[in-house]
Image (tube, rainbow, N blue to C red; front, side, top):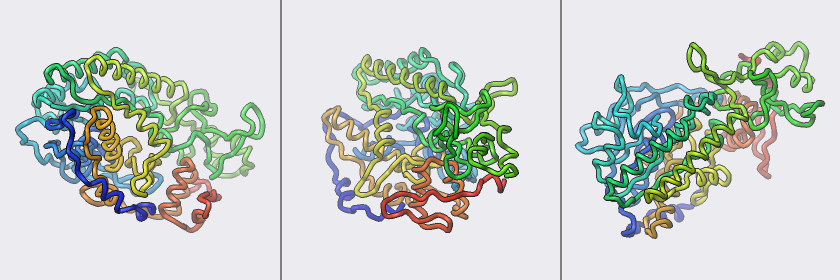
Length: 488
């Protein structure tokens, strides 16, 4: 990330000047409820170097609050991803991390649990067999019950992401199975706010956070719907779609996936094997009749997820009508979050709007430009769903600004310098496994990723044989690529 070197030290240093918090908001006993985004989940796992920079921990540090978390030592739990190629492929660390402060006498201030849905906050007391939830709850009751025990002076609630996300990650959209019904969501959410309000003596102090549109995260947007297997978009020569690029072929009806559909990041594994290629695209491209792609075209459509007798079957395309269903349910959840917040007296931190703005405009800190582009934007980690330490810190910074505006407070904005310079406050950029053969991986990226991602990779790695350097006007020449499938 070459633009990191251009950082203005003076601007970042200015962020470190402490300002006392105003009396209107008291974060002395700050408690956060939520899911993996609160837990500090990063790159497929829970581990200290991610947790110490969870958004809530960064907020707590801004006011010097005593903020206890269920820290896990290296190598973490869940299998921390190590990037081995930009295809992308990963290896994982052993899931053998140990809790670092399991004997804490009180509940943790951070009660976010990876994988939680809204109902889990109210009802779940542990895992059978013992699992990640138990490292947070430790047999002391539900997350909500433990929050009450701490008599919080301030709370943040960011829960509900998994009530919508599962439909996108599995490419299976079934109400009541991968999408939580609206009525059930609202009932559990109301229990959370009603209980917290009572624990605060009937006077709410805290924020609830809306749910970002999962159709905007890199997991959903990195691979374009256009079939660019040959390295450049191939346009229809005739018919209803003349002049528009060919799209991947899907399994729903054996035709091109409709406009508005999404091809999630997991599809890269099957696309590289020739899935989704239409013979008509090869015809329009003038591709040789004996070329190797002919063996796959029209034979391996991108599968749509489904529930069968053998269990859930992973899908690799989310059709346009299902994208709308997910977005509609998310909008319903957010409307209920806002309504319940008003009923019980909590402020609404519109994380959904903040995230949409970051997607559109990025963020700049003293010359460091961050974006949501996969692998090179700085905001998201390897899974395309969860933040890096930098991403979480950006959310914390936005929350502090919101608290200052909503409560008339004077909380000092977080000192992001250590995270921006080192990748996290523990030191070092988020880990990788040593990417090799950059030329081949750039071939893959240019063939299967959206242009902004490929452009970013070229900026990061500079001139590579077969890949011209970025021109002075910032435009990226499109390399002529061999079909990746030839080497499968």
